[in-house]
Length: 127
Image (cartoon, rainbow, N blue to C red):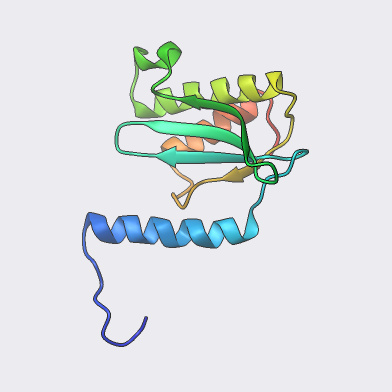
């Protein structure tokens, strides 16, 4: 930390830490056509998963709690994350993707992120 910089507190600090972790992860993780990147983006209310080919810059498959199939579903946020994980795996397999690189987006691998990843694995994605 540089001299004279202030440490943010509260939500601003959390967002800054997530951003720092995501930048560090993105230096190491990149998706290709054979093994695209499964990106998870989380907010307080919703969760989004995308399968991205970074070389072309194309999204091959995506799923979200905003999808009409999941939006009115019963259950807590972890249950909805499981539905998003199985749906994105189903759509990725339909697009011809079997293996992916998991990008947790700077979030800790726990709770909704882990639930989504486990559901995607159970649905047949390998990572």
